[in-house]
Length: 215
Image (cartoon, helix red, strand yellow):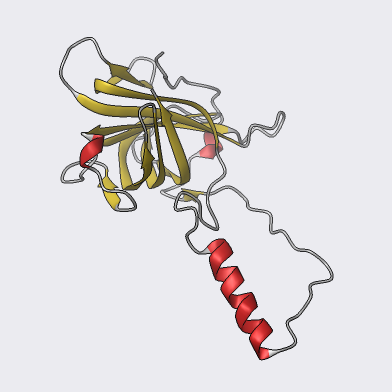
């Protein structure tokens, strides 16, 4: 299965000069909050809050982006292939397992704002070249992106906008668990793009959330 980004729409006001795209998070509040009335109760309450939101799940944090992971793939002996078509203004990412050699590679796609009729939906596809996943330690953030990053990374965007040419992906990857058929971790990254038809215009997208790769 190959994942690829394609040109969708031509809305020109989408690109902003390196302005970070973040999903709008809706705060959740509950009426009738019970306040702690004693010092011991207050200490217990603080401890419970820290326990609930302070690292029980290393793959999730407050303020994460909320993309829907619509596809994912992990290959043990593969290579990341990046193909650009300047005539169509298109970049394709895929995993090649036919050439032999290679290492652990992953490809995942996230869909954002998928509600119909909004017009601001977009998808991010990111490819990671781990080398040997067994060499990665759990709960350690490894740099991703161009050299000298530990994990080479590549990204594309599909949106209702002019075609975007990938510049780079920069951030970190954190391995939470590794099984025989699944990798679970966290990605904190910024994806940088340039408009194919307007090289002076740039845009960035943020990706901060859990990642699941399946063999």
